[in-house]
Image 1 (cartoon, rainbow, N blue to C red):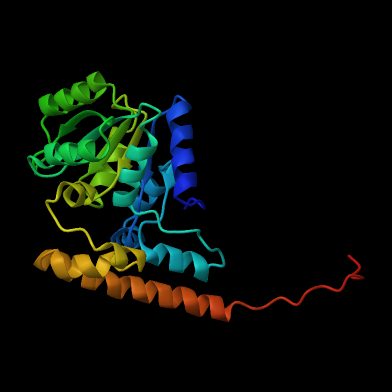
Image 2 (cartoon, helix red, strand yellow):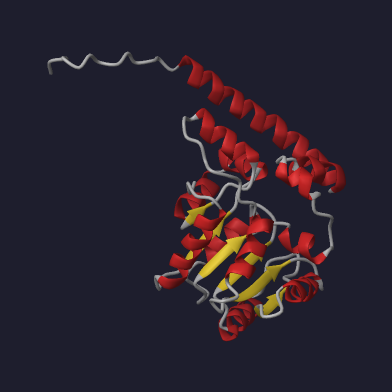
Length: 252
């Protein structure tokens, strides 16, 4: 997990874009934590990521229980806007991959109204099934021909993480970033938590209530599991023996 604030995350992104290699960046929330604990393949993907920024409050709590305080949450939806703003003077070109049909186009309209000089290289809404070989080749060519530097991937977790790991190096784009429901929030397709709830790290609660039946039961299960994990971490920390400081005249 990167020990930076949003400004540091943007500088990290600048570095990834300039080093000539291919990268993917992750923004895990509590649902990701739930999946990472259970999925060895997903843990391997996280270890391969060039940067991991904490979206969910659970990651900040876990880091504190482990004796390390992360500066702040860096939610994927908020970072998408921050990167659009930051990249204006740098000429960053964005490609939006994911969302239901029409969401990418509405997202583009919303963001370009907010940032008139924003460079959107393209959008693509994949079907809810595996792509054929011909479709895979078409998408690859479309992204590469667009000249995009940042490929924002919104397929939902953990599908988007699997997709980015599979396509790392297969698509000639410098950086891929997973942002889950960001396209829906910024396009107006789904409601984003009010600013005050986001400031209090209560986005998960808002989505639990407004996200529909499947999201409700998923989040309830997730919160229960994450709470148990944090409780175990707290118990282990409390049980950790405290070492007495050695006197200055200790002889080795």
